[in-house]
Length: 596
Image (cartoon, rainbow, N blue to C red; front, side, top):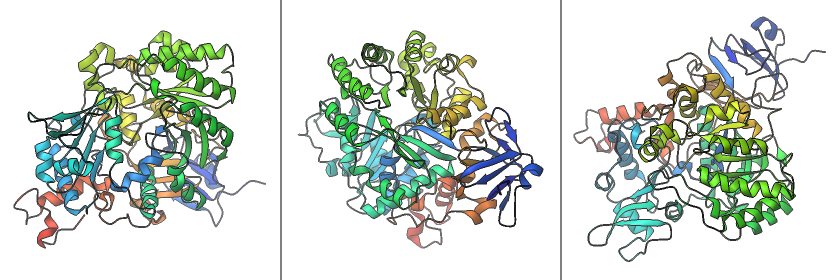
């Protein structure tokens, strides 16, 4: 007996990534899975009186995007505290938003601009100065993170963080000082980001109820951008199981709108093996369910192998104890048949890593274990061949879209043209997954990554790659769907819109396959479906939208600066006729302007 569809989308341009039916006009969904794909006539025959019929009006549909390297769990706890500069096109506008937020943020909270932007996205092509930040926010602590190279703190934030003339420089970090020895407000990662992590972690946190709200709204923002799955790569100051309590609760309450496979990230330098010995006793690889499942170890396996990607600084050499530390942890993981991932930016680090892996493989086979390198921007062809031979994969992120200009300045345009060697990886048959490494470096917006992959350009418009290292739009999309699914051992259930696969998809604002390349960066979803259920809907489909509680607390940036309408917010608040000073908050004067 033929099954009846619960939902049918028809009259569309549906990119399925299914080899037999790569493009169709209609799709039927039942019980959280794709029931069938085909023509409108074929698929509408699967409807009955209870079937939800949705007319796509010719819109492009893609499989739900899957970020293979996202820090969603940590990012969710902080999302409602953060002012995001994603997509802001001028520094003037960015400072305007900062002033508005500083005026409404209550003590002792900070205004945090934490990742997702680059000076090159601004028409001014520069960073804000400390004087500008102090001018627009003289009293509220402000912490602005720029990639993993520096942070800018206003005077109030220096006081809140307890950084004074007498504060010594931490290990691997530098406090910039004026001629009198006083801190200027610039914290410099040299050579790693610990000083930035630690200072940010010293700020106030949200109460538990607001963290739950924050995580739900962060997932909604990701749904707006077509994301339906991710692999959470752990992160600094993300302790297991304490910092997983919020996502555990949302999973228990069936309130997750993103499927998460999570890796476990050690937090204890010198005691990494102890962490993994404990976790391998208590956690079974791939245990969980389709919405929340374990995915192994990493991206931090040992601190002595972590080469942070700060291209404003010389490449760091890993310490001599790296091999000893890494051998102990990886031998244990392989013996327990745990999948793992490892952060490694540079060729030199990856070569030393592979020496360890290959030696372990002679004792305990890697065969059958999913493992991969994260980043690999400067990996050479011989190194890629070694990864391939050992059965490894690579997860690439669009960090170069935000740091490409710095890389070119340090290493030259020729080296940048193959950083990373995306086309070579695919031609060699290495499993490649796409991702962002958000939220603290690049943006969580997957369409910036798809733009970077298919144009070879940074967010500032600098052309990095020649045609031989640029992907077609379909190839880029495949990396972001089926490629990422492989990284969590789920390629048989998600990544394409084929019969029997998870019904995870996004209906886009414009036709990704045919719009001008610069328009790719501005894409979003008008209808996102996860597990056959509508989790985000706007415009013609707003009636189907999933209702969420309002953003809390009420001063939170997402409550006032809707990412979907940020340009309108900027235009409105700067254009009010009552404004004599472009920095002043318009609704403070009772002029009738809407308080966004």
